[in-house]
Length: 151
View 1 (cartoon, rainbow, N blue to C red):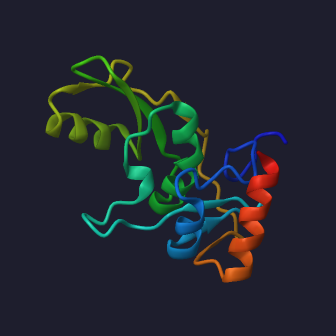
View 2: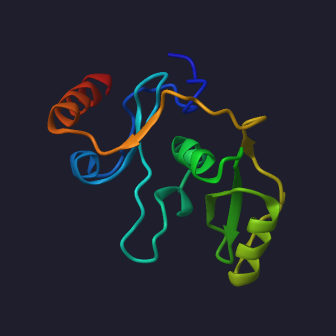
């Protein structure tokens, strides 16, 4: 499968990455209207942050959550490479450079050398048939089965 025009992944069932059954049963999902991939768009209980707000270990993992950021913010968000004082790299999604700069002000031990996204879609596109909702039991079972088959 080529990269999905809507959710930017080339694997229809790659997400959720961690505890897929628990996530699919208990969290709100963005359901891609093009390929059917589910992406967690739930807010955490502590702090009310969404999954896409957290740092990611790799650019590829950050790309898997970029669509939920785009939908939440209604813009083409970007993925930025952040470097900690110890040299460890992470990838974080921001809606714009001002948001990145505010993050860096609050996190003095982190830097962003490029100060531009290393991945960003050219524009935000709305897909009218996508959904944000919880899956029912049958949908969860079907998705888990398809996820195992895709691996």
